[in-house]
Image 1 (tube, helix red, strand yellow):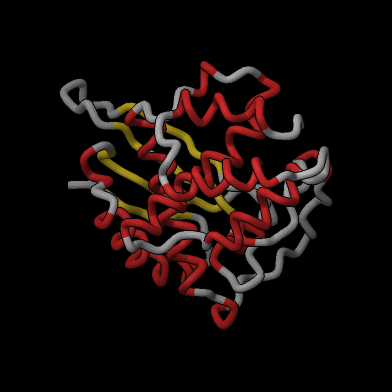
Image 2 (image 1 turned 90 degrees about the vertical axis):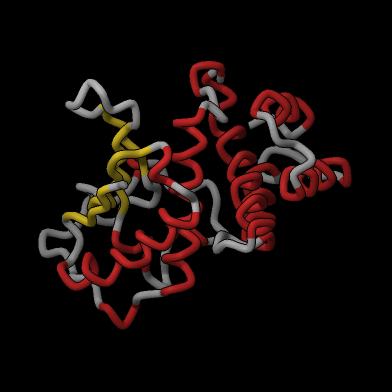
Length: 218
């Protein structure tokens, strides 16, 4: 069993979102690794990137972890920055402060397709972290941005092969292009790397990390 919650989002959005969270958690067998998982509104309403917090259970017999995914309500709307072709997103310290009177989320802007893609992507990424499919401590500071971008390709490639919602190959190609073409020329070899990431030719985090040296340096 896993406890699933939505907190801090607009009331109607929390209620509307919970079935999508339940479906994503079920399809990814999240209960095997998490005793609870919550989607929580970010303190910065217009934050472009979600972030994950992991916590231990107060029960010493519980070996699973609790997950809290902080994100903005825009991740669930048609205008969500999670699928924009502009990459990388604006750093949090460069973002304009939130308006004093935050505009409430309008349910007519809700996107079922983007919500499914966002939740499946973020939950699978959370599962990767818990299962040790990624070892953040092994990444040098200068590798984090590149590794995050190319690991995201593998996440959505796996979702695609499983027949589950995720960001499309076109969306990932666009982000890959905007990120790496800004610092160098993307050659056919670079696109072969992208395709291998998407198709599952590169699976282990060490292999994914190794291809960074073959891409334009960020």
